Length: 63
Image (cartoon, rainbow, N blue to C red; front, side, top):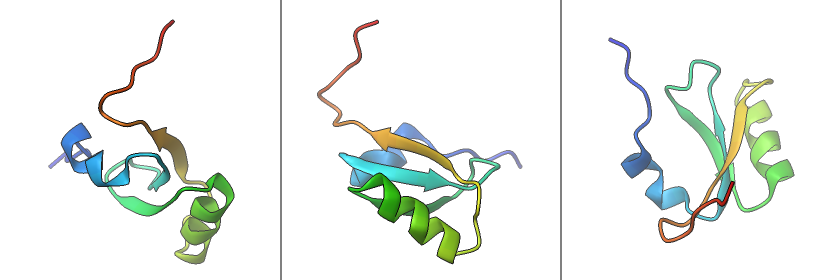
């Protein structure tokens, strides 16, 4: 089964940096600071997590 993380599952991480596993199926760590989220992921054995910031649901990007 190819289960990915859904946007609705990320709401609890709004305004935080999130570290995902390489397969993008699990949230490994989260923190308001990028460095802390990455360090938490490394302590859990994920040395190359996929990092991104979860924006509030009311915000958007202008491209």
